Length: 254
Ligand SMILES: Nc1ncnc2c1ncn2[C@@H]1O[C@H](COP(=O)(O)OP(=O)(O)OP(=O)(O)O)[C@@H](O)[C@H]1O
Ligand SMILES: [Mg+2]
Image (cartoon, rainbow, N blue to C red; front, side):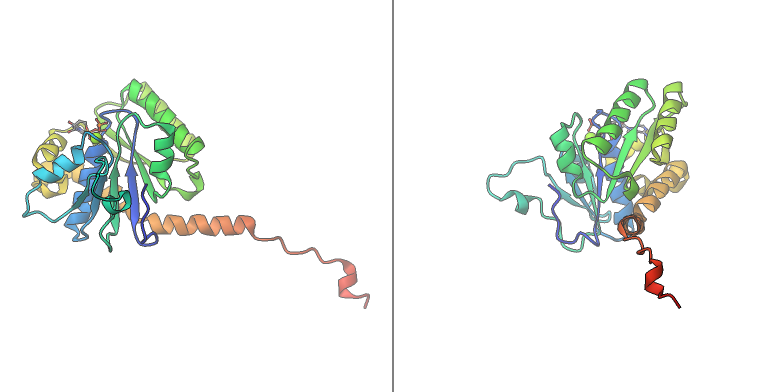
């Protein structure tokens, strides 16, 4: 699904959670806006037929830094699928929005070439239950390798920490999956969605805590190549043949 020729230089960031309304599109649009602000011309690929990320892009003013949009949910009859899903060459960050209610096949397909996977979760007990299942599916069905450290969780719309949220934290902790940011419940995110702007493009005095958390997310995402290198090194160490045990005879008897 996310075939791309520049695999080594492009961070393919997939945002998913089968639970509707957990904040997938909010993260996708805001992360893309952070990269756009850095002058990196990111791309958003939207697989959700609701098209929330694409609608956000349409609301975005031309005077703001550009973000390329790919409406992957549309089935084009005039173009091949690979043409429709092509990402402009030189795109360093591709941010992928996904629909709620993913099947196992969708999950496998969506994550196959992902270099970073973010799961937003809100602290309601139903969402937490769905997220625990989603993480288990990512590990067991989509076979995301935990050692590659490409999977992280973002807590969203937090007001208070419920018992079930603490349970989720412990669950993630036991799996070694980091919670890289905690976004508060704030009208700033609603405004960002309505106006086609990123939080970091809004007046700093109004959005400081939200912008700081987004910064943390982007900092973590920026470490994707380093994490991959480390995982490759670990793999190499794991398969390196043990040195042969030399028998006495090889030293001769002298
Ligand atoms: N931290 C937040 N504070 C306040 N409102 C938020 C926050 N995050 C998201 N929202 C709002 O919650 C709603 C759902 O968010 P969003 O559309 O990002 O979820 P989603 O996971 O993409 O949903 P769907 O599964 O339907 O695509 C939106 O109206 C969004 O503006
Ligand atoms: Mg959405």
